[in-house]
Amino acid sequence: MWVFTAGLPRSAAHPFYARLNQILHQHDFDGDVEGLCQRFYADVGRPGVPPGRYFRLLLIGYFEGLDAERAIACRAADSFGLREFLGLVLRKKQGSNDDWTHPHDPDARITKMKDRRAHLPTKRAARVA
Image (cartoon, rainbow, N blue to C red; front, side, top):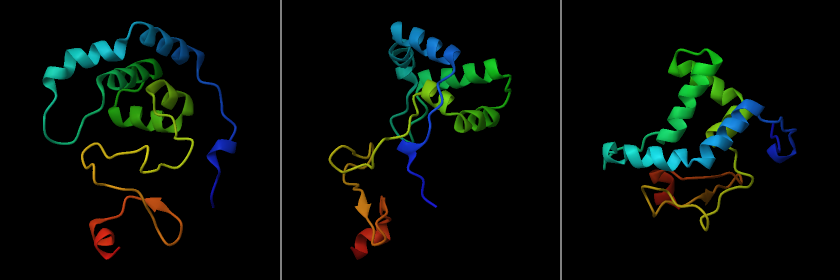
């Protein structure tokens, strides 16, 4: 079953989180925190969660009474309003190679499969194609 996400009704974000996000944006919180944490970033390995988003996740845990990171992740995944607070909104259209590049592999490309799905092919599928 396929659901066209643009046609789904959208609930309003929680006014508290919307106002808090507004205040954080006014004071360039994300830029300041990222600058403070820059010296702790590793040059190799998988990139971590941006510090501003991690702080917002901790705020969600505090305000929602969640004491485990797994519970915070489940709550954030379950709420469109919290996803918006975290800056994790769904893309409105499919990705294309013109507007998307993989952050660690610039040669990676989105491929259309025979059944019309689009995704990054595995190395085996790329060799066959």
